[in-house]
Length: 135
Image: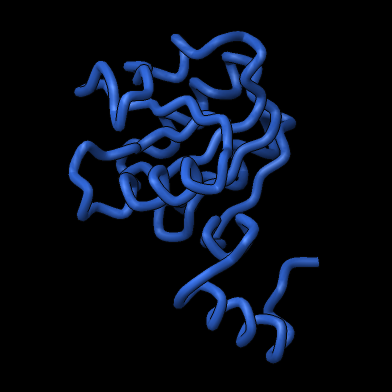
């Protein structure tokens, strides 16, 4: 899975998610135009540079970049896209639908990346309790 918006700054959410998924043994392809590697992993400067067999993308991009990166991902042949909550715009879901890709939006990946730990485990419990899980 590729991750667009991975930060070099360990205090930023884009880095925290990358480190957490890496710790859970996900095979990751970080995308950041400002870095050649992050935590020892080769970093791609754009979605266009990803290997052709990468079909999943997690987007933790600033809103002003999301739709541009989404369109790039669709052109690159990525078919499954997760747009981290707070990254989507009013047009993101429509663009994905028009591009005929599967999309998850407005959800935090850390609620679903097993094993779920820490505060995310608490949030997951609340989501289940109050029926806020996706169908």
